[in-house]
Image 1 (cartoon, rainbow, N blue to C red):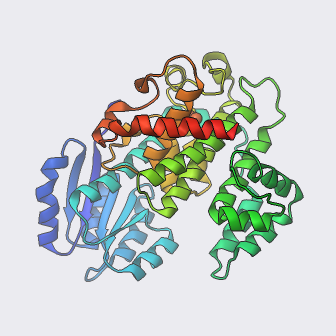
Image 2: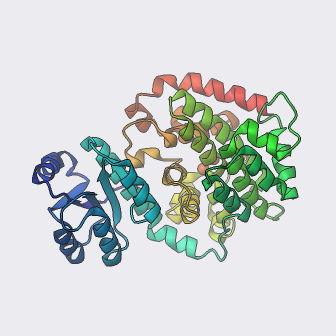
Length: 402
Ligand SMILES: [Fe+2]
Ligand SMILES: [Fe+2]
């Protein structure tokens, strides 16, 4: 896949810092074209005269500060991706809540890390605004909306006094959801030794985030359950998604990702194939795309016939729902993480491996890693010698869940 070049505008009142950016641009010139401004006003002139993919600005500048610049930039060119460099954590809080910034990058930041953050965001945006995808998505009459219960949980979690008990109480108000959650947490899939009899206890044992992702998954999948004449059953995809979530979280632990990332790995596993549900509403998928018998759609054949896939469709939906961009990114690129050009293992690595291993263990056809995994990507991250160990862990988890 040909990568397009991204146009980046750097803004900083300190000429030394700008020169530093300028000097390191040689290294990134294959993918970036950069321009530089020493003040907010100069940046606004450039933004109104030329197209830019991303704006990377310092926060504290004389005259117009970073915040004012973002506000004005958002008015002139709402599509530009906005990044702020700041060493101050209270700035970061304020900016995040204003929704004016896509990411606050802590200062000081090495250039290769800055490049990684900005370039990945650009590539995700390119993928989710590709004309083929937009054409397909706009052809879907009703996109599922974010479940009300999930919104209530989010509101509760934002309050400082949120407890497992409160979260459990909210779920308990929805008897159908309570029944489904309890059935799931008591199933072999979670392998818990004690019987969980109420949602409050489920939250205490499994953690608020896991329960949140289950609520989201259960709700979305249940909208499609009972539909007839689908090329693959919704239950099959749901089961696959749950186990991928479990394995992704276990691999995240082995990749030494932090607690939040391990939880996000589970969420992204539970939701990674949600785009397949959307694809059921598109007749072209039925006509052209082949499905394996265990529900794994053939990514390549989706691309061949439609120029996009269930992965981007899922990422698009989760993006509209406002899920964290790391989860949107992992879902969008779960079949081809190398396209993002990441430099170290992360959430997306865990999800890609989990999905690949599960498919490899379940499809009896052949057991070659290269048929399921993005090997050049894994080689770049230095992970190839760990695959045997992780695939046997996956097969144990799969056996225990049956
Ligand atoms: Fe997939
Ligand atoms: Fe999958």
